[in-house]
Image 1: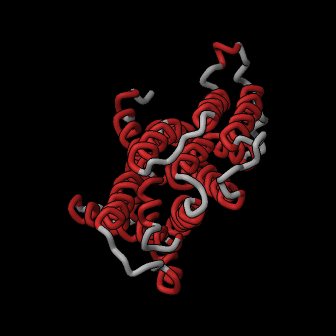
Image 2: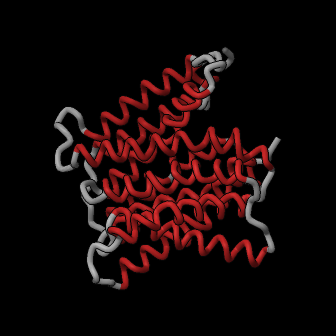
Image 3: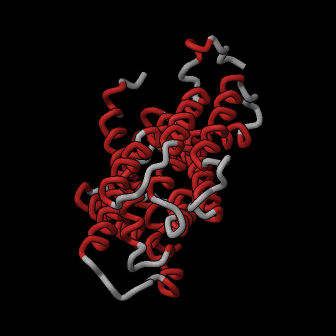
Length: 301
C-alpha cells in the first residue's frame, strides 16, 4: 500500500500550478490565438522535459505502440483541451474555466464506466454523477441563462474536461503497466502534442505582434511548469495512487483559479459559481467512493 506522504506533496504542487494555468492562458491570448497558446505551452513544456531527461540521463520511450498511446494521450491532455480552453477563455472568465475544470473526476468516472463494460455502475457512482450534474448547473446559473458567459465557451470547456476524463483510464491501462519513468512518459506525451500542433501554429498562431512582459512571462510559466514539470508529477501520481486520485487534483485547481482570477485579473465571482463548484467537488468525491461509510452505501457490485 502506497503511503500518502509519497504522493501528497506533488499532488498539492500540481493543484497549485494547474490552478494558475487559467490566468496564464488568459494572458497568453493577448498576443496568441488559441492554437498559438496550445502550441506554445506544449513546445515550452517539451523543451523543459527534454532538458530534464538529458540531465538525468533518461531515454525517451521506444516502440511504435508506446508512442501511439502517448500521442493519443497528448491529444486528450494537451492538443484538444489546450485549444478548447484557450478558445473558451476568449469568451468566459478564467474563474469559470477553473471551476468547470473541477468536473474532470466526474468525466473520468463516466468514461471508466463506459470503457470498462464489465464494471457495473455502483450506487455511489450514479449518486455522485447526479450531484455533480446539479453542481455544473449551479455553476452556470441555469436559472438566469448563461449570462455574460458564452454558451459556445461553456460547451468548449465541457468538451475539454471530457477529454481529460478519457485520458486517465488510457494512461492507467496502457502506459502505467510499462513501468517507464514518469519523466520519459511526460516528455513523450508533451513532445507529441507540440509536433501535432506545430502546423496549426505556423498557419495561425500569432494574434498580435505585441509582446508585453506580463503575457510573455505567463506563457513561459504555463509551458515550463503547467505543461512541463507538472506532467512528470501527473504520471507519478497515477503510478503511485491511481487514476481517480490523479484526476481529483482538480479539487484544488478551482480554489486557486478563483483566488488568482479575482486578485490579478479583477474578475467578478458570482455567488453561485463557488457554491456550484463545491457541489461538483462533493459529487466527484461521492462518485469516487470517498463517503461510502458516511452515507452507508455499499461499494461492492
